[in-house]
Amino acid sequence: MRTFAPAVLAASAIVLAAVLVPARARAAGAAEPSAAVLEAARAGDAAAQLGLGKAYENGDGVPRDGAQAALWLRKAADQGNAEAQYNLAWLCAQGEGVPRDDAAALDWYRKAAQQGYAPAQYNLGVMYREGIGAPRDPVQSIAWLRKAAEHGAAESQVNIARMYAFGQGVPKDLREAAVWYRKAAEQGDAGAQYLLGLMSFEGQGAAKDHREAAGWLLRAAEQGHAAAQARLGAMFLRGDGLPRDERAAYDWSRKAAEQGDAEAQYRLGE
Image (cartoon, rainbow, N blue to C red; front, side, top):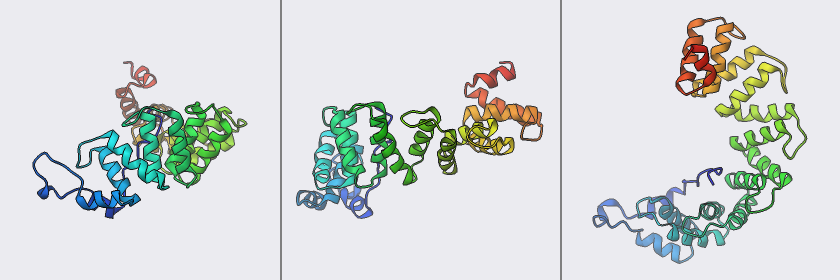
């Protein structure tokens, strides 16, 4: 299920540096973990187990091997390593190296989330929202998404904004939706910038302000957001919140049309 964020790839610099035998020391085509890391992992070092599990999970210097990844991640996860718990949950959700098991994925995400691991909090919130691994639970969903959002996770902030915008599991509240879209927009999330721009343009959840709307739409458009490019083209064409500029209107409409935006294609007569 690709709703989830990809497994975190970072590990401590010490573990990453030691996980693999230097290239010059390997026999051709025989990539193996270093003896030092294997020894540490077998001795119960959770950081080494995590590094080894992720190396096998990502094929990082060793052959990709889901079963070996799951084995070593499980050892670290059983010791309470939150990142290992998160990565193991991802394997369970995808059925990589272990049979697919959404309930087990939910359980491992919960263990990591309870330690404050924001990516796990986000995924746990999504699973409760979608009813994966457990019955749908909007209350649990927004609680975990909020925890991730408070850590600065833009995806969670966008999800909370949508829940407030559509009244999913919470009372509909466009002002609260705008607050959360703004948090994500200020982090550079193009979708949030676009939606905040629309809300400012229409005066939904905030005072109507076409100039502010144009500013957010421009930021989204510059990131390649097709719908924002199309709306910006229309605003330049009408001089709505921006100086009227037919050249800019054409250029932004063309960018959107090239991405398949129907509104922009119609405007250009394509």
